[in-house]
Every structure is written in structure tokens, then in C-alpha cells.
Image 1 (cartoon, rainbow, N blue to C red):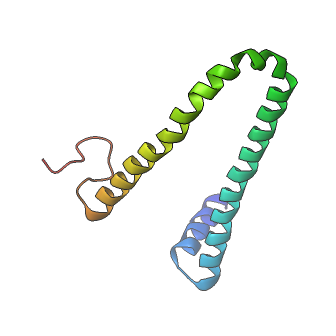
Image 2: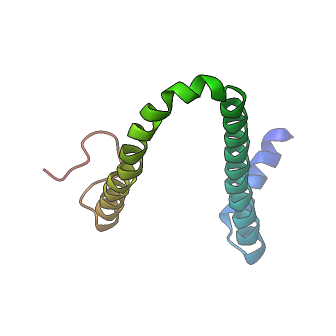
Image 3: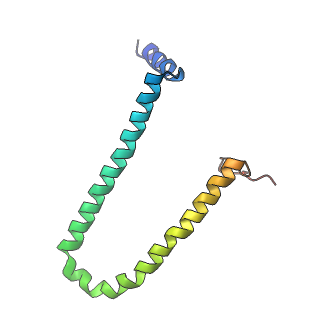
Length: 104
């Protein structure tokens, strides 16, 4: 009985109707929202820990100031690499596989 119900559910998702498309969009939005909530939780825990042990980190303030600009500049490089990868996948110069994904 359970296997038949599973097959029926898979067939339900294969037929795109407006209700099913809306359901899939809501499910994907909910998953994205969960990632945001987990990120807020991780940031809250990190800031609480940092403020709790701020006296220990006060000696490392110069080191933190030295690390801040490289962390900001790495964002641009990662963005360039990600956009290059996305464009290459879109135009077909690389295939979405782990090995042997270039033309030559």
C-alpha cells in the first residue's frame, strides 16, 4: 500500500498544473527561509559568545583589523569565479559533471 502511494505521489509531481507549481514554489521558499533562520541563529550564538568573552578578544583587536580587508576583497574574487562558472555552464563550454567536463 505504501509503495503504491509513493508512486502515485511521484506521478502527481510530474504533471505540472498551477496548483502544483505554486506548491513547489512555496516549498522552495520555505527551505530558503529555513537557511536564513539558521543563519540568524548562528550569528546570534556567535555574537553572544564574542560579547561573553570580549576581554579575551581585546588583545587580538589589531589582528582582527588586519584580517578585515582581505575578507572583504575575497568576496569579489569569489563572485567573479561563480559568474564565470555560471556563464560557462549556460553557454555549454563545460558540462555539469565532476570529471571530463571540458570540450578538449
